[in-house]
Length: 543
Ligand SMILES: Nc1ncnc2c1ncn2[C@@H]1O[C@H](COP(=O)(O)OP(=O)(O)O)[C@@H](O)[C@H]1O
Ligand SMILES: [Mg+2]
Image 1 (tube, rainbow, N blue to C red):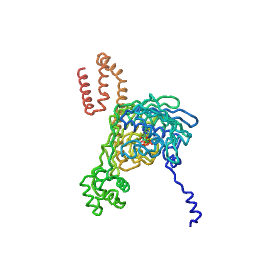
Image 2 (cartoon, rainbow, N blue to C red):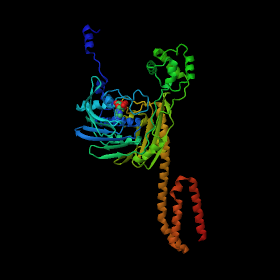
Image 3 (cartoon, helix red, strand yellow):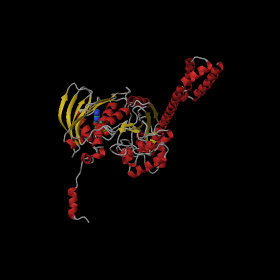
């Protein structure tokens, strides 16, 4: 039993907290856990925002990232882009108010979704160094300003200071922040690796990185084409939960549930409205959507599952593209071999379309170089964003690991192989708020597996040919070693000039082990063998 005193205590102790306070205490949820990961998270949040903003404004992105040491486990991060900048009246909310942004409400395929990233960085800077961030914003209309931005965590509100109007500033946003409890290294989980992979999945972007020692790394753009701008997608009825439907209905201005359904959801024809009416005669779908009740929403969502639907539209999913992936792999990994696969759109959980692209690169800078050789690596991407952490929980890792690589004569442990997988969707099902891995949906795993297996087949063929080539090359070398002695012996037997015999012999051997014809085409190989036989017969009889 709770005594009067303790219940009063509960009332006294009861307090409300803002979302900023929550993330201040739980920053690991946003990717701020280990020091190395925290630095990558900061860079990731700003770079994804720059890419999103540039693409939204149809600008080819030029992004620069600079890290300066500022003390023990302390760095100044300076990130600039040539995007549209952020107007004065919203810059505070954009960069220092958690859950504020231009993307959450849109239903468009973009990297950012929740409006957490930039404010999360400001919060992290402030809670580790006590300092606000500084922004310089150059707008399309030629106006520019700079200001410092902190965050009032109690109220999840921005604190803006030192606003200075500026002249002659190029268009774009520059953010400078000091962060402590961060560490720079050059491992697989580093800022450099993150940016390299970002360049791989964004061939239209130019990214320059200056590391803490002042060393510059430039990832030049491989294509001059801005990716097609994704359109807002309507939700498919099979992707709706009871709560989604109810919330959408309650915020709708339509007069009737029937028109609300047909105007707001994908594939909802008049025929489907009639079908629903027949399935649920007790629900009045001519009433206002605002009047929809929870139990009615439940019945409707159940009915949707019984109805047959055309698959969701896929026009609003923009993959990287076959040719672009090839160009960028060539540009950045310069592999000996690559095979790119772009699959057709598929659907998970009935209502969410997605597209998988996969590629295998072999040789060159593919794979991971170890002291004693190479090992394969998996390059995971979701909507072109590299996923560096939490690989064990990711659908991509799961799919790649479940492939029987031996069947393809590929050994991921010792070969210089990179497996590249990008999933594009308006609704990437991430495993957590930090968006570090893709949740293991069966349909997604299956689709990745098929794509990677297809790419693996290409590599299998290449390795097979390569082995054959090297076998022929070895045989060629061995046999060539005997041509000298053999031509001398034949010369003394026949009285012909040894040089002539040697040159004929060498031609025969070269033709027989002519690498391309032997490897790529069996028919050519047979023909060559016959040719050689004929040629040998002819020579012998002539002698
Ligand atoms: N580099 C930038 N250029 C223009 N606008 C930006 C930039 N960075 C952030 N923004 C704006 O700030 C908003 C908040 O960013 P963020 O907190 O990362 O959330 P999200 O990216 O999920 O929308 C974005 O939606 C965008 O409107
Ligand atoms: Mg963002």
